[in-house]
Image 1 (tube, rainbow, N blue to C red):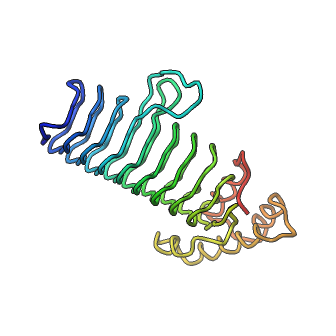
Image 2 (spheres, rainbow, N blue to C red):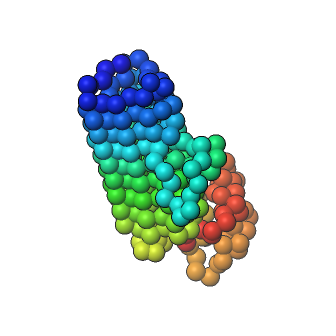
Image 3 (tube, rainbow, N blue to C red):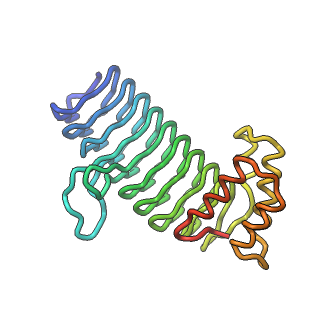
Length: 256
């Protein structure tokens, strides 16, 4: 471990091999930091948070802060960040508001400057969240999702896997997996064509998803009718089934 004389590390914190801690950073009680992780200057990590191996935490980031909830109780809760994740300048990740629960960020994620993750968010692996985006409490971001800058999202919404959310969008309902949304309020634009191709998804599967999304965008079909048409007219694949299940499980409704 390498630390500067101006950093503060609680004796109960556990730091792995080759961890570097910059000046004026504070590592609180019970925090665990994995091997080879770099903590920049003026970073604050508390609440028994766990930061994985090979992570980079940049200047001014705050991990494990109290949840911003009116009347929140002082409960035992934390933050967990997976291996290989980067948290850029002044990002904030608040701990859970529930006893013995966690706010979770997966592996190989990139949270750019000034991103805010509120209490009880769960972010999957390989997610990118761009500068200035704020996610309210209890939001689920599935693996491979891309959320552009200055997005604001209502509590309890879901961002489906491999979805793309355009910059400055207002998200009040669930973002479908494999799809692109944008606007204020956000509207469904189509499939995330570039992201699906980059993921290695087969052309036939991408074509089926494109057709399914066209049904969902038809103004003369409600969601239930569109799903029925998808089930009848499109060859079922794992991805189509995933899309249908995501729609059926939605509690806040989907962006169309």
